[in-house]
Length: 175
Image 1 (cartoon, rainbow, N blue to C red):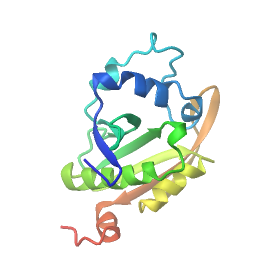
Image 2 (image 1 turned 45 degrees about the vertical axis):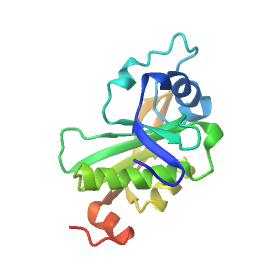
Image 3 (image 1 turned 135 degrees about the vertical axis):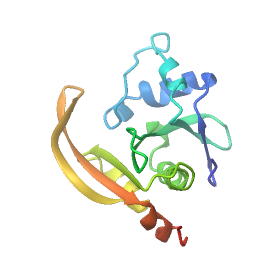
């Protein structure tokens, strides 16, 4: 999958160091994206990421380097899936996640056949809320103290979009 500035494709063995640097060891990312923290590259177990067919690298076209990830969880439901994304903090505020998510939604609706896509974020993560809204997702519900992460009970805000709405937003007739 491609966008103007990005390539979304499967994570590769050669992405290990970039994944570690931009996701699993980036403290700012770990405050907003649920992931196992890795203190050193030597201790970083990358194998489970390589075997996940629903996990994609977000790469800069100009370098081919992994700067973030985007993934989906279908929970054995053919109609809907949940998505998540994380981007190295040095790449924040450049529109990369919005660009990646728009293309990823096309993929999930048009190629994977989902009818509804939803996502959640830690309440207060305004950057993630803005990304979802820019991509046409709308508030679904709030869940107080849904999970414990990094020693804190977290409230989650859920957003969703249906294929029909996505098609209208993209100027497509759907079908």
